[in-house]
Image (cartoon, rainbow, N blue to C red; front, top):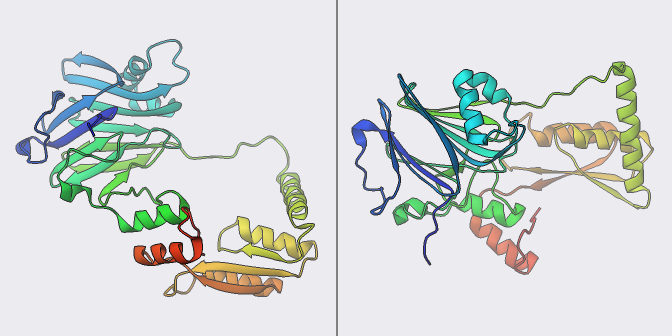
Length: 315
């Protein structure tokens, strides 16, 4: 099958190591120079903008789209905002995008990811070389660079998606959403630029708390009205304990709580917290052994219990 290049493929390495065996034999790309980094970039379907300044050239590459750019080309809009005030430009980001900025003035490459990673950027380290792409396969790398990640495969079979920014390939990860990722001669630095905050609507906190509790009670009552016995997946977080407390409040005693837990989980973990809460509420509690990273066990359980179905939840 012919290899179709991703929207964006970037190779970054220290200028002292610009020769690498991992470089594709046929590479049609821009070669970008910074004082300390050697950057090669291949892109298709990616908008771009650049500014040649006395201190060095700044280039912007945009995969996806930005909102509220006032009719200006999105890549050009972000370039102008970045040159004016990088921090302010970050605060104004809105859309489905992955943005790469190559800034020769600062000798760095910056990657901006959107709030929910709707446009993913995949990251891989091969020795001193950093690869970035909008496709996670990196088919141009040697075979040893594309080994499957057994844990991610098991997660995919159980959950339908790898978790914790993993991919199906060992060593290839997804850059975190809502973050700025700085690649420089000092390595990779990541910091978030957005976090969810609740806005006040002017109501007294006591009224808001009472309204939330009333809504939660109504929701739980509507779901368990016809159930002979109620089962709650109880963890040490906030949502499941709140539901368990509502069940006690409305007089449901026919409740069994269960918690997924590692056999070697230490004190203070989800299992202990959930068990204590269940005991306090007077509910029965059951511990269920959780997946331990064994791909062979997931495959075996899938065959025996799930008849070969995908997205089987063993627990």
